[in-house]
Image (cartoon, rainbow, N blue to C red):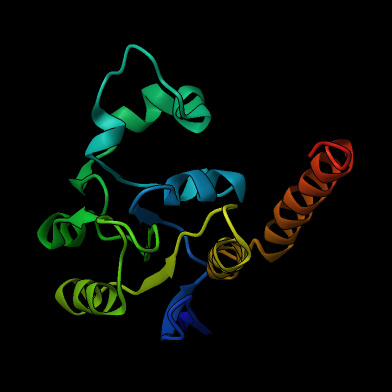
Length: 181
């Protein structure tokens, strides 16, 4: 059977050709694994970075609490905050690497880093700024990140559900606190 492909645009406006269906991914950079779990794509994860291997007495990441034992059994592909090891990625052989990073921080990511990882590994890399709910610009980045990841793994509908939920929750909080000055 002929391998199907999808050509898509990532969060850095890069064109990425991705095999279809995507059956295995690595999530590089702070928060990208969390977003994949939000998108119900955790069954695609075939490797982790060092943060998932650490035992922590107090764990503040709900996805890590739910999936801790299983995540710790997966092969290591690099250090946390996006310090990837291209040789380990090649050995794990994912269909796709999803690489995000917080804008304007020491552990952000860039087009250059995403291009570099793709060229060193030969694996398609979808990149984006992680975003946040701090301000409108970072909220736009967050929604773009979720949509890019959703498109890459064909969970577009779930991405829109998550974005709608976040929007509804923020609207609810705004209405409850409207009279506080």
